[in-house]
Length: 361
Ligand code: NCD
Image 1 (tube, rainbow, N blue to C red):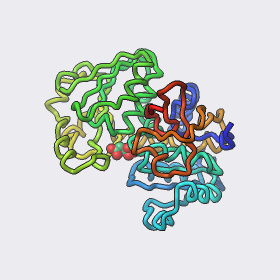
Image 2: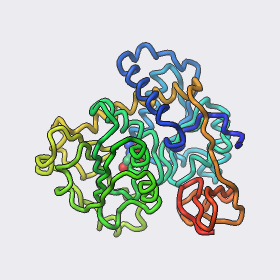
Image 3: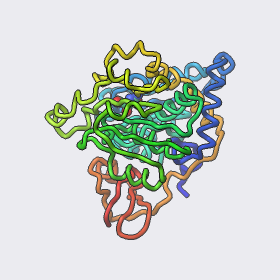
């Protein structure tokens, strides 16, 4: 057992049982009904927010959530003004902040970085987005939106459209929705931005039906939920590659006319041009409500973790393979070289514990 398995961290939602997610959804629902009842629930507690990447909603909703629970916040949103600019590694920065705070929320551009921080942090750690890998609290936000708006998490046909390759919200949501009966996935993207192989492995293993299409017009009519995403410019190798992909999918009134009357449109936001502003007035557009649900579910999450409500999940279940290097150049283990190389599985092909990529030994 890793020493840090004593905390309830949230690195990947799937580390925790679905019953725990449902507990969070119910608590968030209650908080939304009567927020005043929770105004002092985290009095005296401090949350550290470490944002190495830009954020509006995630950072502010976490901060607001903590303030609405009566707690306080410390942190940075511009690593250039912290000791990171002097070359401090993740381990040292997060070790120090976790000694000051009771709970830490972290966003970083590198896959696996938040798990790396949690390995040595002195408080619970929440993943607010690690590169193109995962974004579990956006998924909790998405689940709350589905729960409140569709009143079920089962038997939904969900279309995910846009940057399925680099979109961490997509990856987390697919992993989560794979845990519910009857989910059908329609993956709508160009060939270049299709779902990564490791995610397809997860989908295939879950046994859920999925299909890949390029045309949004053809697919929209069969959906209960359309999850639009931004083309993740910052994750492209070159501006030229980005320019070739941008603007391919634009949801407008004409396309909405082909959708079912009870379909809902979600988007983690920020949007660039993938949803025309004219769609905002359509009652099926739920993305602004979604951002608000995000605050309540984060209140529920902070409260649950600080009150130690749930079972800590082991951070790593695999073994250290000292000489192996993860095949993903974007993995944190290829940037912060002191990290122990943890891999799951046996045989020649193993799975990196930090970024989930397959590696050939
Ligand atoms: C998303 C993210 O950061 O991954 N935004 C968010 O947290 N609401 C989506 C995006 O940036 O496109």
